[in-house]
Amino acid sequence: MLKWRPLGFGFTLFVVISLVLLFYRAEDDEITAPLLKTLDIIPSVLSDAEILNVDWDDLDYPQSASHAEATHSRPEKNLDPITGRANATLLMLTRNSDLDEAVKSIESLERTFNHAHNYPWIFLNEEPFTATFKKRVATLTNASVQFGIIPREHWFQPDWIDEEKARQGRIRLQQFRGAYAESVSYRNMCRFYSGFFFWHELLQPYKWYWRVEPGVQFFCHLDFDPFAYMMENKKRYSFTLSMKEGPRTIPSLWSTVRSFTSLHPQYLARSNAHKFISEDKGHNYNLCHFWSNFEIADLDFFRSPAYTAFFSYLDGTGNFYYERWGDAPVHSIAASLFLPKDQIHFFGDIGYRHYPFQHCPQGDSWTRGKCECDVENNFDYQGDSCTGKFQALFDEIV
Ligand SMILES: *[C@@H]1O[C@H](CO)[C@@H](O)[C@H](O)[C@H]1NC(C)=O
Ligand SMILES: *[C@@H]1O[C@H](CO)[C@@H](O)[C@H](O)[C@H]1NC(C)=O
Image (cartoon, rainbow, N blue to C red):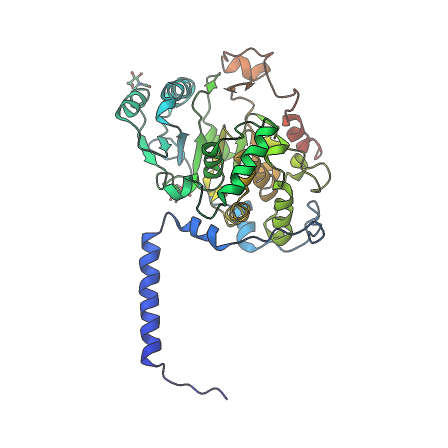
């Protein structure tokens, strides 16, 4: 028989001190909390033999209530009655040295869209912005402009990465002439955009964001607000360009994804877009991804249990550094598996160029938007574009 005994003084003291420490840490570490979680998880990536063949079409396991709610019935607020804006921000990650390119992008988006809305801009950098940078940028818009620094632990290669192994990985990719093969800062950027940007304190107040890269061009005048479109049509992730990833940059990404979905099938959404990324129900990755340098998306998707668990699992392998995993395949695979496909949207009306590819709206959209681009110069159905494959997901229903 268990008998109730008053707790000893030593034990009580231990509990009190633990609680104090816990609260102290919780307060101190608010922004880095996701990182601590990452370090706690040492993923054991399953071998091929251990991976269960989850049928991504016929999901007959119970979805966790919170995930089902997150993907299917998110609470939606209307546009702000005073400003007419969505709960949204424009985000640019840029270095001081990219100022001229940053100016081009801002000028282009302001002229074609934002001068009529004044969505706030957020600029992030791993080091402080110079006074020159801030001044030139602020004159381009009437919207509010904020400049932020990325916390060190969200940017730099973590200490637990084996630098020798990472160096070997960079050399290996260089031998295959992979883009940014030798670049550590490119890897920092990919990992930041995969797992951390949406936790930045400047982005915390927002639900929606539009990612804008330095040196891009917007071709058409938008007579609608894409954020409002996303809200009204219950979309959560959108793109304008899609293409195929260089396989040498992600040798083990797909087996890691399969391992994750095998361990956590409850995160797979019903009616997901797996056919966009795999021709054979998930055995192989077809390398298709949304080109995430343009992205209008619901930040709460990235903050969701499914996405954060997915990123932590991927990150724990170290392969953002040992290989060169890009944020584009990471976002795209997550959106394709954890969201119902009708929550992903192709913004055909938004003309966009990021060297060397461009999406130029066709037909009526081109005329309506007074687009500057040559309709003939459009990547949608060429070479390695996957946009036709995305559209085919929806033909099947008819
Ligand atoms: C800011 O607002 C003023 C007054 O409406 C307008 O003349 C000006 O063009 C705007 N500037 C930009 C960059 O949109
Ligand atoms: C904007 O979105 C964020 C994230 O979902 C939320 O925490 C915040 O309350 C929202 N703000 C408004 C004014 O609705």
